[in-house]
Structures are given as C-alpha cells and as structure tokens.
Image (cartoon, rainbow, N blue to C red; front, top):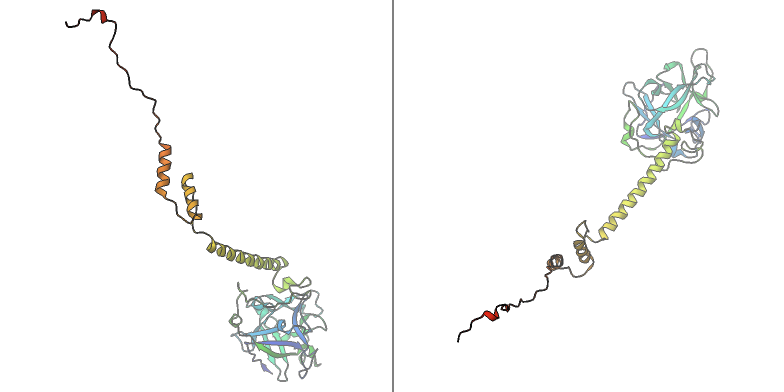
Length: 303
C-alpha cells in the first residue's frame, strides 16, 4: 500500500466495493442527497463527480470537492450522536476550510481500491458506509488489531470521468471562497439538493437564499431588457428638449421640433415686445383762440 497519486484536473466517479467490484461498471455513486452523502444509483453522473486537490503538507493528502457544490463545500467528518459506531463520527459536507476534519489521507491498496483516512481521526479509523445509509468513520478497521475479517465497505473504487479544466479548483482554500463558478444544468428535481426534498443547509444554501438567487436573476434579466428598450427608444426619439422657458419660447420650441421650417426667433420676440409695450394716447383737438369781445365798445379804431 502507498499514498495515492490522483489527478487534480480530473473529475472522479467514486463508489464503495460494498456495491460493485473493481472489474464492473460503476452504477452506484457517492453523491450528495437530501440526507447527506450517500452511495446510490448513478442517475446523473455529471452531478456526482469528485475532485481531489492535493495538500502540500503531506503526500497523498487531499481535500475532496463535489461538482454539485463546487468549492463552497468539502467532504468532512461530523459528530452524530445517532451513529451506531462507537466513534459517533460520520461523513458530511461542510463549508470549505483547511482544517483537519476536511483533510483526507488516501491510500492506494494496489488492487484498484483505496482507503480513506481522515486527518482529524488518525490512522485508527477509515471511511465506511452503512448499507443504504450514511458514511461513517469505522473504529473497526480491516486488518488491524483483532479484526482480521474483510470489510468491502471500507474499500473505495474510483474512476476518472472527465477533465476539470477550471482554475477555481486548483487551490486549497483556507475558508469558504466568496465566489464560486456557476453549475450549468444543476438538477432541480424533488431529490436534488436544491429541490423541495433537498437538504439545502448541507448543500450550502438556505431555501430563502436559493429563492433569492432565482428571483435576483429574473429581476436582473428584466432590468437588462428594460434598459435595452429605453436605449432603443432614446435613439429613435427627437433630439430637441423642451425646457422650462417662458410660454412664448416654449411654443416656438415646439414649432421648431415638429415643423419642417424653423421659426424666426427675432420676429417672434419683436411681436411679443410690441404687444407688451403698446402706447395709448388720449384724443386731441387743435384749440381755437378768439379775441375777447368784452372790450369791443372801448376799441378805438384809426380813422
């Protein structure tokens, strides 16, 4: 047995030897369900693939990401009081970090199968799976102590399915990144992680957050379409803008905008001024001057 050398630029389909032999096609995949990671029918392999990013601190140590949750979450171990194994430790998906519970030491057994050991649990436990149920860290490890029996459920089979070709996956993140790549065609059926029966909290999104993302995308599309329509109408509309001028000038502007012949501003202004400054005069008659008649008797005429 030796430290596994896995291709970090490959998506792997993963299963347990409990369900299939090395020589058989994989028809049961390790995947995210509404109840957490489970091995079940591979209905949609494109959403059930895993990427193994090496951790430089130790050869054969990796973080495990699933394409259904991108780099937001990684395979981890969690305490579960309902677990029947003495260790009470189960496999789970948790928000990304670089702590020991999310670091996996993968051992190549040399026969096409692998052991998964967790850095937080040491070499005393390996990843196992209950029939039709959850993953757990088994305290009874095949070939150790008094346990000489073979346990096929503790052996894992992997086959590369397609390349990753995305630099987002080429880094070990110390915490959940604030960005993540979109997941085209992510299943939205009742059993998908975002469906009504999906475990959204384990998938990293609350139901309100998932709904908010959908509503936000729809609003964004409507806003983009509305902006395009407004720009198109603006390009087709007249360039003249009627401002808050005095009434007579507004009328002139309207005539200019809709009349084939531009108006004469000077004539309009003179007409307006003439009308406003008209002068009204009282009637006038020439006065008549007469010689007084009172002194006619005393007039002296020359002989």
